[in-house]
Length: 122
Image (cartoon, rainbow, N blue to C red; front, side):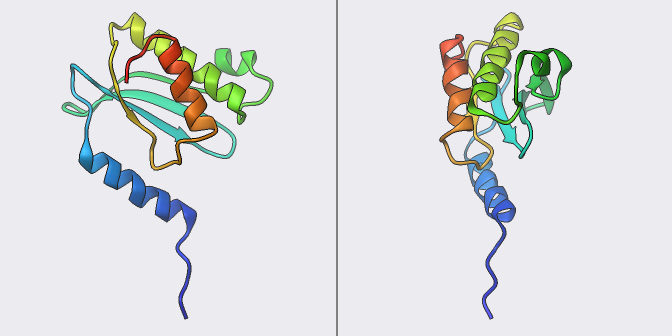
């Protein structure tokens, strides 16, 4: 009997397809997004050396204090503003957006648009 593949495995396959197409460099690092049922995480990564340059998530106390819920579109847009501000403070202006295999709508889209409005280019 045919067994349906789990959503997590499908997302991981999509993510690997995206990761094979591009990677972050020192001049243009990768903005990687991960979302769980309760939280969202964003990292700016230089893949040439494997370093995380900037990170932000809704787990952090100061970000969590600003939010009523950590798993909403509003929380994602706030996280986008925070990651963009931190990246700009480090001198990072352009990034490659890695949606992590997630569909570009809802929370992922809100994070990306908020980061663009805050000054990141991608």
